[in-house]
Image 1 (cartoon, helix red, strand yellow):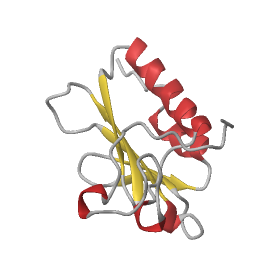
Image 2 (cartoon, rainbow, N blue to C red):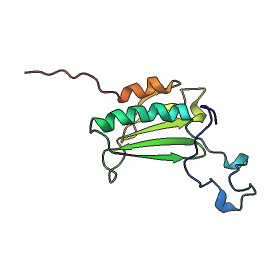
Image 3 (cartoon, one colour):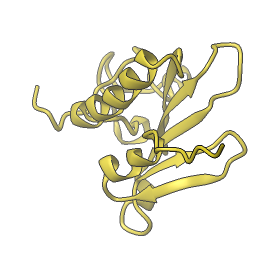
Length: 130
């Protein structure tokens, strides 16, 4: 397995309930999913790990779909996600495949480079006034 191979985290296959003709573990053209590669997932988990260590984030979820893959970040698992890191291959040649989305749906940053897009999640120094 190379670093550019997608990581499939779920045994479920899109369209498997519709009588798909593919053998178990194989995808045909109509079942193809968008997934994070190993390098992408490692970059996301590096940021996630720093925020967990700081006590800001506590949980995450990964959703893999036909059109996009989403890494959702939660403060508590019972809440709506604080941020969603999305990979949408339909936008790869236009605005960039990666985006960070706030809870209200506002796109905080979008681009072609995942590390640059993830930089919006890093803590910035705050101005303290007395």
